[in-house]
Image (cartoon, rainbow, N blue to C red; front, side):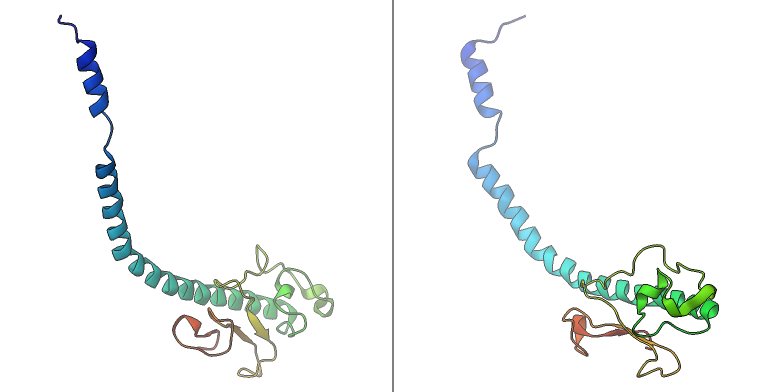
Length: 150
């Protein structure tokens, strides 16, 4: 078996790594791909948050309806959505909660859900809404409100 000289071994070791040019080319390719893909990902992120808010409003609405079936009324604005986790003073023995497994979540933008009972839009029920990304009433696109009555 022929032995490899020290000089050949040094040459093999020197060629084993990547050159700076090769690394820069790979980084440039990754950067180009990221600039093409990132706008698509962020566009879908906004619609995912909107879908999550709609699902959470539906889930909270179902819990509010279960509360009403047991107690005979929706929680008041003062009792708020917290009445779905802990029995408010006015609920009495008919409260069979908790109606949610976990605490009331914030909307996908980190803001609390707005709850009014009796509602301004639904005077015999409740108004439940997320104010969207900007946290202000109304708005367009991602800033639009997610409302339980729509």
